[in-house]
Length: 377
Figure 1 (cartoon, rainbow, N blue to C red):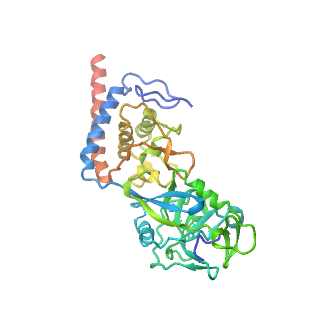
Figure 2 (cartoon, rainbow, N blue to C red):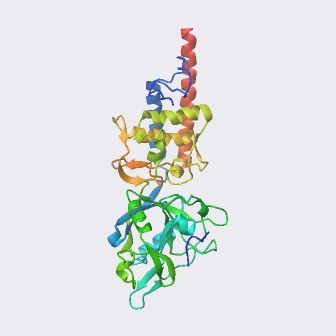
Figure 3 (cartoon, rainbow, N blue to C red):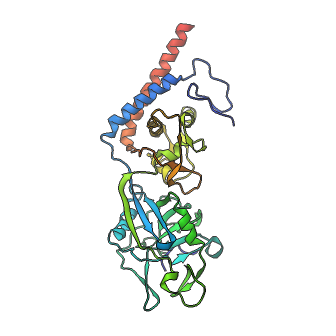
């Protein structure tokens, strides 16, 4: 069958830029709060000017109505995995997923991977058999993102370019599905509290049904399996089409990882940019990819513009608690603000223009400090 093949110190606030463990900076090295504010205004102006010609990065929010098991939402990575997303949305648009069942649920102990899998079969109540839905032509494997907990990927046979309608959701990190020769294309992630529904399905008892092993069963006490025992999707539908991405700089802006967006998060990134020239990321998926618009797996000076822009949109707030669960990362420790202003991320060309302005401003600021120091001397 189709599927994954078996197998320390606190940082200074906005008045100073301080490197962890370093001595307080001398007056010639301090970047004042006013300078930071001026830089932010300049960067925002550049962002506004550039955004007019920039294509907004978007996503599609899809609702999985799983009947008695509950409903969850998946945010699709439209521009990161456009062909794979388009294939999935073709099935959604044709209502092909209506009344399809979750025909596979695995754990590390029984299969070496932990997933729930569906999108392939309807249940024929007269014969008691699973019947595969009509499928479109297989698509080419487009592997770019890791099979982390909470991500959705296309199921396939052992042949790389064989994915059609079936999908699976990773209930744990599954590095075995990222290895060369055994890669599966991730194209979205579960948002909000949706993993509680997915986990609930994954922990149901399993049995052999219609020639399939590891079929999750609900309300089952033994004997013949009937339709009410199966986990069946009423339908999978588009909830919000082409929205400004939830998987945007909001999550990775919280670089201090204290669950709050504030000035120190921006300073943390800026410190590393000034010292090391880049800010390392911890994974090649989702919000990371949207923040790293150049695709280098690091945040560069151009990418930092989005961090600053995110903070500017907090208006007069000192911080924005990251609560409300509009979106949850595949890792359970990062969430977005329910009332966060959806951000659009400019394309690299726009960032290059704004980056030039940033470099010009920094050069001007350095020159001004030197002149000021010389006049005081």
